[in-house]
Image (cartoon, rainbow, N blue to C red; front, side, top):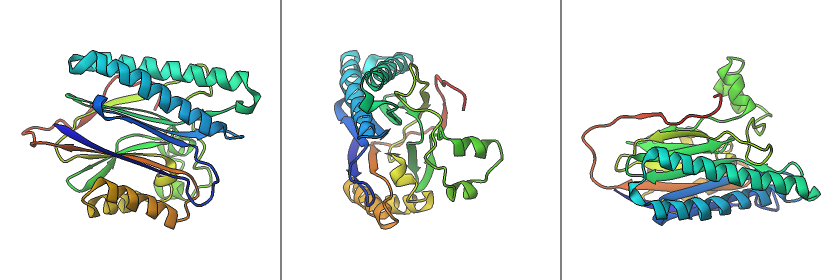
Length: 265
């Protein structure tokens, strides 16, 4: 099965700098997206440190390990790489006063023969479009999501909340980080969207699905998503990665299941 990738980022309508960062290694089937946080441009530093570190170190490992590496080995490599990046960002934040408190969200996808290994930290998201239906395949690490899970808020009430940006996990803010990781089957025709909350907060899931279904090329779909976020206010930076699987359909499907899940969600 072959993969087609496309990425896009935009500063939005309200901010002067872009704290979102994207890195791709298509040969390794690797996509990384981060949304930084912190003053004095520290969020921009954190997100760029994270994406650069992962695409370099994990990309090298994936190429050296080849397609014969088993899923548990890839999972361990992902964990180690994110842990090392977390430590580097945490140390930078604690040795440079300008970077104090900086951190970043993460969505990390590795496409393998057995499926997509998708890890995430924070409220940047992963979606899958299959047969025209869009499904969110990550669960936000956020105060709002915890309130929804506890029955204190409905999803509709959460969409109107002023606390959307309060994440419960981030890379670089503590000396250790828990990345949630799942394995998803990939079927021919599947389209995966990784994005920062600058897109998902501005464009609801129904509209995301409409726009993805309405455009044949990934570049057109990406531009339509960015335009929609900006037309709805563009209150944050926007970043997205699109990855589409191509090939012959399989005769059986297995849905998705937890793989090496970490943390309390």
